[in-house]
Image (cartoon, rainbow, N blue to C red):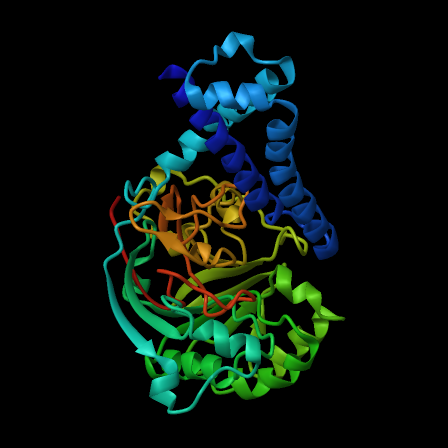
Length: 400
């Protein structure tokens, strides 16, 4: 029995190790070609390793299945790699179990009201523009055009009382590839504008294919928010010839580029700093450390101590950077909610240094609240139990 358990754990550890490496590989700022080559090498190696065990150690495999193998009798290459796979449970597996959404560790208690919209039916016209998109959108359980419009009451400890009830429409991961008609994203932008937000934020991955830059003005110029519309770029935005073309097109559409910068402004009489973080694909912004509070001024308002800090970051990995810089609110995307989620277990795939820990949802890492959107689109035109998301955030004071 112990032999079976150890063998099964080692086999699962083998696949889990490669899944963990895949997730973390896609969190790096490497050039896309290098990442894709490395992915292919890891995928081939994963299966070749198992094939090599079957070919070179058939007797060991037979004894494993028969339950007669003794771990100490393993050939040293199998013993070493088996130990590595078992260690993967400690390094990656146990944290992965701990951070499952069902346990809600580090999660913020953010009630939400969800309205699911079949965008194609609502618009009365088909959305696929390519053969690939047409057949993939018809696959069972694919929710690619079932847009979840989620109004979230987001508690933000440290939120100035003047900003209680402040409304932010958060969009992310547009992924204009040409496979989907621009009407889909335009619907999301129009729906966000109809909500009459104070601010609109877009957290990166706008463009995948160069010709789609010409769509940006038509899609985004109709966005309306009383305090402005702001965006950053993500890793997929580096796939076009010159990412500045995307920035310039969004500027013409009336959006403000926050990439790698800190923008001081005033909202409802409160001084705030709007911060854009596109790391590791572009430079991080330079931020001064927050000043220490004076003990004799305990009754000062937040606004008089220092500006409230709101960051738009493409990757949720930047939450620890936000903690170090006293940023109270982070809006992020990049992970697409895992693109697919298993019942109870949640997402497996997530391009993050922390795996699927921050795949989507609302998190509290003192002093930082972070909202991670599942995004609107994706290069992979398949979403299983993971609807695309338009986030309508209502900020609420929280005395935590």
